[in-house]
Each structure stands twice: as structure tokens, then as C-alpha cells.
Length: 118
Image 1 (cartoon, one colour):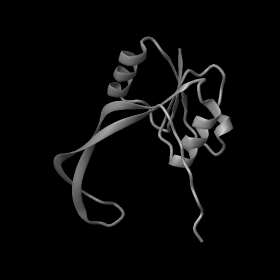
Image 2 (cartoon, helix red, strand yellow):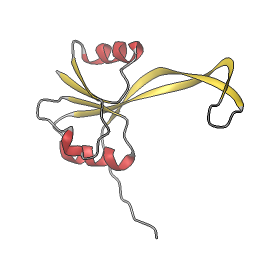
Image 3 (tube, rainbow, N blue to C red):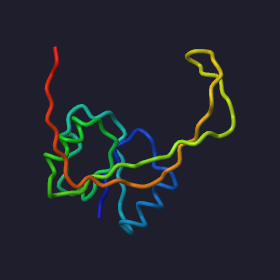
């Protein structure tokens, strides 16, 4: 079984452990670039797409691979560390948060209908 991880970031140990818990001994291939065209990640030998996409890209991916592969996305929880850090953009002090993997979410059905508002 082969999983395509579409992210500029490596999977965390928690994400990897969770993936292996659900899929067993799975081969993970990473696509580290920004996806400009969904076709660049579509492959017949991918069984699971692990992505964090906006709705339009997610819908397009689902339409291309529907029934041929699974689509999952990581869900994290954000918790206050108890520390404060200086925001480099504003110069203001703000709470520091840590993100910890919570679970993987699998998309079973994706339907979107949109309209451009001018």
C-alpha cells in the first residue's frame, strides 16, 4: 500500500504512528511542492492521498480519484504551552501554542457547489 503525503512539512512521529496503526506497513512518499495543478499528484499507484487542501483543490482531487484511492487529512489540537513569545510581525507578545496530532479524518464524500460573487 502506498500513501502520498502532500505537504512541505515532514509527518510528525504521532502522525506516522497513527498512519501505521490504521494502514499497517505502508510506503509513504512525500510531495513537498505547492500543488498548482492537481494532475501533478495523481498516480495510479497511490492508494491513499494525505493532504491539507482548500475546498476547491480537495473537491478537484476527489473528482479525479473517486473510488480509486482514499483521501485523508490530519487533524491537530492547539494547546497553550504556558509561554509567551514575541510576534515577529507585530512586535507584540502573545501566547505560544503547540500543535499535537489528534487523528486522521477520511473523506467519504465531497460535494461542492460554488458561485463567484462580483
